[in-house]
Each structure stands twice: as C-alpha cells, then as structure tokens.
Image (cartoon, rainbow, N blue to C red; front, side, top):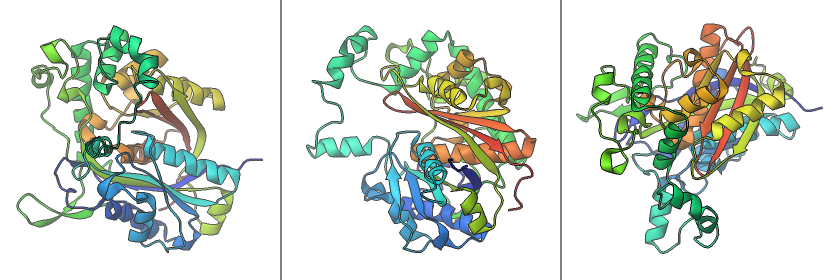
Length: 407
C-alpha cells in the first residue's frame, strides 16, 4: 500500500520587487535561508533529509549548475543531502512538491524538502533563452516541428509566436471577461494582500531576511513589496493595454509582478514523521497534471483541477480555499467561471498581481500561504493550481491536519 505524504512545515521569504530589497542576495543563499528557517523551527537533524527538490525557471548564470544542490551546500544541511532542480516553468516548485510527495508516498524516501527560488532582479525572465540565442545555441522550438504543428492556429489568432500575453487575451475573450472585470479583480488582489499584511496573516509564514535599503542602510525584509494599498479601479482603468493598437484588455496592472523570492516545504511520510518526532500540518490528498493548448497556454489549471478531483473523489463544493496563481487576471477568473468556484474563497490574501510572481518559487510560496490560511480559518480542504508555459498545469489538493502541530 502507498504511504501518505504530509506537509510538516513550510516557509517563504516576503517577495521583493524588481531591483528591490532582495536584489543583493544570491539565489542559492536565499534558498538556503528558507531551508535553514525550517531546520531551526522544527529542530530536526538535517541528516534525516533524504533529498532536496528545487524549482527554478531561468537556470542560467547564478541559477545554473543544479541550484538545488548549490542551495544544500549553502545551507545548514550536511553535504550528505543531495539536491536536484526542476523546471516546469511557473509551476516548478509545485512540481517539486509533487515529486517530493511521490517519493515519500512510494516509501523510497521518508523526508524530503521541496521548494523554489527565483531572483528575477539578477536573472530576468527568459534569460536562459536570450543568453543562449546570443551565443548561437539555438531556440527551444524547432520551426519544422512544433511551429509547423501549431502554425495555422497561431496565424488564425494573428500571432507570430507563442505568447503568454496573447494567451491571456484569448482567455479573456473566450470566457467573456471584460476589461472592467479584470481591473476590478486586480484592485481586490491588492486590497486583500494589504489587509493580510496589516492584520498579520503572513507573519507565521514569512522568514525575515537581512537586506540593504535604497539608502544603503541595513534593514530586515519581512513584507511583500509589490502591494499598492492605494490601487483603485479608476487608476487601473487608465493604464494602456499591453497589446498593440490599444485593443487589448490586459495591462501591467492585471499582470503578475516581477519578483524575487524563495520558499520551502518539508514533506514526510509516516516513517518520516516518526523519525523526526513531529506532527503534520497538512496531508496531501491529490496530485494532478494537465497538458492543454500551448497557443492559449494558460487554461491548464482548469483541466488540472478536474483531474485532481477525479483522482480523489472530491469536488469544488468540498474546497474551503483555493490558490490559483494570478499570472494574469483572466487565469483565475476563467478558472472560477469554468468550474463554478466561489470568488470569496479564491486567493483570499491576494495574489501575484499584488504579491509578485517569483516564477520557480511561486508554487511553494502559494502552498505555504494555503497551509497557513487553512489553519487560521479552520478550513479542511484547500486546492492550488498554476498555469505554465507550454500549456501545462499542476493542481494539488491538501487537507488540514487537526489539531495543527505546535511549531
């Protein structure tokens, strides 16, 4: 019989805006900081950790060379702990969580740390593609195969290349979402994120880290930097669409923010819990994936969520909370519309439009928030889904363990 995968603890840094508080950190050191925080909070012997599985999208420069292993060697874990790196685009650290859960469910390993990091200030989005192209290393897509397969569809949509921005426009069109719908959702994201911050909802999940402020003074980074408390519908409605000729509905205000950050999740099976002498905070109930149209690209969370429900026999009615990454406003709104979800349970503490989307970190970041919010509200089931480049998606369902562990 398969074992059960449990979340024992989880932690994240506060997101840093582009060239903000975290810009001076090396990504391996930032990843090590959240792992060390888990070790300190749980007081476990790091030698019990069987593996570290780490998500990172732009694996070039400071994030190259198997950053998962480099994070282990930069942390307080012993060198006997291995490490590996995962790239499933924006769902990289959610996939790391899936791999960790599968490892302990199989019984091959008992204690695994999954997480993710992205220093977008140091390694901008697309650097691995752009840097390689400049050196004559080629492009990820072969025009004779993938482009040939989807060329007619791209042409029909008026697209020259696969584009997440165009995909967001297509989703808004296909699901009947207006510019006003998107702008008002973005305003609510900032409002919820500001409320969560000022009322201390993020206090338990955030690992404070040292940084230097704009004036060169040493300080501590402990709050997400992208939140704009004064955001109003009137302000957002004046922003120009990102699509040329001004006929689009997506703007900078209804897109996720570039951000820096790291997050980590400690996952165990029953043997791991006994070995560490700890109680779990949540149980992983369902793991699911989906592959969908890469031209639209961003609709994968709908199919992945449906697959997750099929695998565990639960439904949307059973869910108390859901975190669906706000890559662009149409993604969670279309997801909610397609699945009949309650917007009052969606991203209740704000999402990536306010809190930032540090790519490879986001999956573990959202899971950390989901676990803590289920505990705060007393909810039972939570669902998380992320859209990913290439039209794939991850969905994860967790169940809060009652009572929560005393960490």
